[in-house]
Length: 199
Image: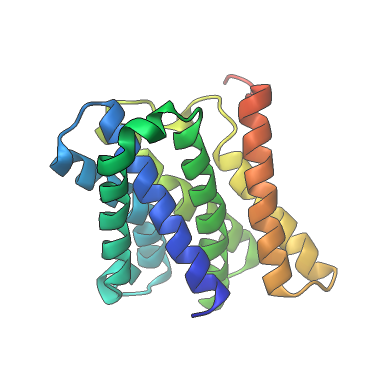
């Protein structure tokens, strides 16, 4: 198992937990929690794979994704009260998820032979689209449509990756620094309440 697979599985589990916590907060039943965890974890990657022509999409070819989603739901069902007491828990798992999926989406798009600007955009799509579906199903305004700095940090992380490659860094190092920069920017945005200007 290489680093990309480890990061991919980590992001899937993080997003599944994030989705299940949202469903718990909305007082959904266990089936509703599983549905929200599922669409949060695989929504962005599914759209990305369809757009770049990678079919069947990843979760249909590898059952590990489904088991990770089940694990995320079970963890929330068993320890949801503890997780809810931890401040910003949902933001933490969501932040890890968008950072990892931004990198996965970017590298898979590059592997498909598309340009770096397209890869940066599809990296962000991979990261945030599952959250868009989650928030829509939970009757919430998706974060990318609010003034929160969310998808913007994914794009910024992609730019960091591109600049590091230009300066001779390996893709592995550039990827880890991209993930770290997205997490750092998102945490700072939450703590310092950074917002984009209103349209």
